Amino acid sequence: MGPRRTRRGTKCRGAPPLAVAGRPGEPYASGYNQNLLFEPRGVTGAASTPFPEASMHIHILGICGTFMGGLAVLARQAGHRVTGCDANVYPPMSTQLEAQGIDLIEGFDPEQLALEPDLFVIGNVVSRGNPLMEAILNRNLPYVSGPQWLGEHVLNGKWTLAVAGTHGKTTTTSMLAWLLEDAGYNPGFLVGGVPQNFGISARLTESDFFVIEADEYDTAFFDKRSKFVHYRPRTAILNNLEYDHADIFPDLAAIETQFHHLVRTVPGQGRVVVNGVEPALARVLERGCWSEVEQFGVGDWREGDARTPAPAGKDAFDVYFGDTLQGTVVWDLQGTHNRMNAIAAIAAARHVGVPPAQAIESLGRFANVKRRMEVRGVANGVTVYDDFAHHPTAIQTTVDGLRRRVGNARILAVLEPRSNTMKLGVMAAQLPASLEDADLVFGYGAPSGKDALGWNLGEALAPLGDKARAFDDLGALVQAVQAAARPGDHVLVMSNGGFGGVHQKLLDAIRAAGAHA
Image (cartoon, rainbow, N blue to C red):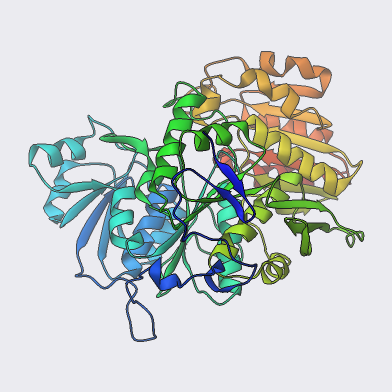
């Protein structure tokens, strides 16, 4: 027997009667005494500290990754002494960490044991055979994974709002943090990017609320569960779900199992905000759910085209809860995927008491995330964008979002398929369809090293015909894009890495060509 519908959303099997939805804007979105449901640690008031426990010295292995770097910042803000190491220590992460008073060491030399930290915190980049990790094991020294440490020392006692999904996690987490911030909640947060409303990726505050990007990648070499099982959210967004991370998951069913582990950790008096149009997420909930569920896309929350046209350069859409119009979002973002991200964030914010009308107004001031359709510069009338898209679905929605913004102007897509999944070639056949709406396509695959492709990029892009070219030399790619670009064009660079600084190289080349024209 699956979930049953109620007039206040969906109640999954086993959900307790106290978990009611309440009216939009009602405090804690409830018709009950919220103290029955949630007992924060009491870290409120100007004189209290956000992390009331004894200070310790932690040494973080793999500190320069986005997640572990954010964890380091949170630990430092909590008053701990933090040091760390990584294979490559370089800006901008190294600069950000050092500015927080965090000492960094390059490499994993066992001599780092001489630091004598109270605890080693291990990132999932570390594997057996790592010389420092082997020394820690041989000496029987205390260690823990990053997600477990975060769950036990930062999230414990907080009302955690977690955002999970294959796509849109960073953007939706940033939106949700902003909605709480703009409503005066002063939330802590940890985001896998830099929300431009905050200018930082992690923050610890005195607030009882913490917003976190909930990643399904594995926790550590000694804990192969997804990171998010350590977060124990009271509010969980399940944004979407499809196959990814082919390096650790054999198929979609394996990822669905991990998502169900997350659902199992949400209390009966919590809430799961789920994309109602995703078959994979429906299968996850059919395995069992003990919390209140609100759907978006269909069911409880949905969006529709605005009744009045958006101003030039803006997008506008109406937000409905049930059949009731809650308001109209007018903002700078584009694309159906961002509308879905927005209504998920509105629904989650409502769970902690943010009225939908207020959330809708706040989204008009949402400044997006760095590396999400971020304009890096304009040279000779050519606009160069940076975007993190690297999965075919994300590539397609990113190109579609830009197309909505620029209309018939030419889009030159510049792609580096360097994620672990893409390097394996599992989704190479899906690339042409994802890039179909671009006018020209320039693909780059590193010829050697850890980012080298295990497949032929040129063959994969061949179905696009003459409009697509593949390169294994970054300089040649820059020259080709510069030669093709003309005033009014939009160059969309997509990669989940630094791409060899190609954004600035393109701007410099286009600018130089214009100077000699």
